[in-house]
Amino acid sequence: TAVPPEQRTDTAVQIDGVRKSFSGTVALEPVWLKIRRGEFLTLLGPSGCGKTTLLNLIAGFLDADKGELFIDRSLVTQVPPHKREIGIVFQNYALFPHMSVAQNVAYGLRTRRVSKAETEARVRETLALVKLEDFADRRPRQLSGGQQQRVALARALVIRPRVLLLDEPFSALDRNLRTAMQVELKEIQSCLGLTTVFVTHDQSEALSMSDRIAVMSRGRIRQIGSPGEIYDRPQNRFVSTFVGDANLFDATLLETSGDAASIDVAGTRVWLRTYQDEMPEPGAVTLFVRPEKCRLTRAGQAGTLPATVALSVYQGSHAELHLDCSAARDGRVMLRVPASEALPVGTAVGIALPDAGAALYAMEGETE
Ligand code: ATP
Image (tube, rainbow, N blue to C red; front, side):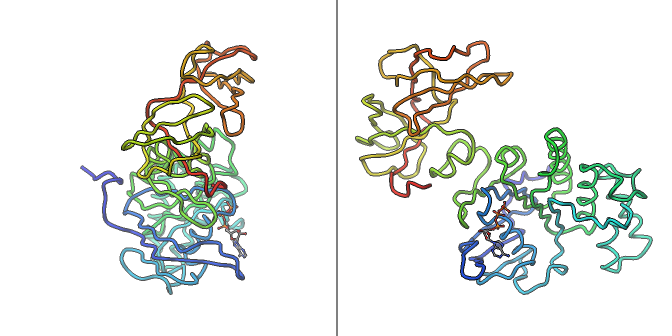
């Protein structure tokens, strides 16, 4: 049986201290990253954090200021894009409008001087892979957005790339189509065992598709790990708030014992276990807890934080309760409850903090 991507150790792409600036402004701080063979790695971060710059450096569309890049162990830092054997899919498809679907897909093979017979066979096979066998003779403008993106994917796959790069490929599609395309891409990728680097600013897309996620901000990778690690054990304030919903409280760290911490939150004292490697110094800290780790109690229960229901948002399977809570960093806490248990606005409640699964962040570096 195949080794699952998270257990593979061989490196397909190695990025060693690669840095990029544009006329004096740093777009990418030196980055070190090993992308494993066959893995689906996502670069996730807000607009301008350097995701596309890193992708373009791997593709060879940009030259690094310094650092080295290896694909399949060979140094490619000076190798031009078309010789890197990389498949690329962009957000805007970038199909040739005057060519048929089959001609678009065949393009990369023509420039590589593949024989006519083999080209025909590979185009047919790749169109079947993306479920477009019957559309070979159409022009791009006669296709839907999702179909056009599948042509772009086929064009990238037909050259049998060593690495597939995708830059926000589904952002122009409506939500249902987007979800369908995510599933399709994931199936094709894992079936082919294709090393894939995917760029998105959409955290749910990253969580659902990736073997690993590299969360970026301001030209740096802030954390890299499996979706579960990133969601359950964010290592800093930026990752906590950018991925998933975060409840943040102003707290004072009183004492620690191993991974357990005694904290004071607005006069309420609790002990809780953190998942962090390093605890901050005693003093003012920020407490981070995911919504599903907090529990709703009746008002006034000992050891809980007083709060009031400010807004209840119906979500079908559950309701989001937004609570006014003076202990919270921005005065608000969010919890999810079964839709049938949603409470009316104005209800006084208590918030019980969890025994474990929280994190404490030092006040320094307040911006992230
Ligand atoms: P987005 O999701 O908006 O595309 P991104 O995370 O992909 O954002 P990059 O496109 O990599 O971000 O840009 C990183 C930084 O580098 C930004 O501040 C951007 O303005 C700058 N930048 C990118 N390309 C150039 C360029 N060709 N010339 C000058 N500055 C650039």
